Image (cartoon, rainbow, N blue to C red; front, side):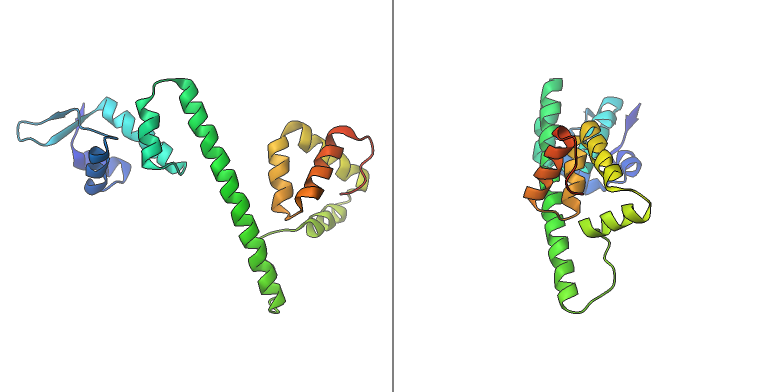
Length: 182
């Protein structure tokens, strides 16, 4: 089966100019031309475009996508995707700091409406109101740390806790028998 540039664009929700740009960058070259010299794309091109769209949706640059597609090794794909995850984690951390600063500025201006974020104090109050004791919270941290340490780190960061406090909680979650803070 072959696709015209219009058919391919329609299926993926892309404009003709976007597909021409992908061609110019070398990301997606048509496999052939019709008798009237129109671009023709094969099923293999279709699959390549699906990959391009998936990688683009991760936030990768078109340059990184091109480099990734030119490599055939699985290890290269894993390395590029791991680097993308790390970059996204850093961006999320930066955005959390911006969010917290903005909330603090709003609060100092007398704005009292609840924001769409939670701090440590609010989280602890929520757990206490659900009937969790300090020991229950300790066990929760231990389970979170043992099952998903990176997600535990991310969650603690989302509560806008200091790096020192996060390190202390994670260390105690891994090693101590008795939890001294929540």
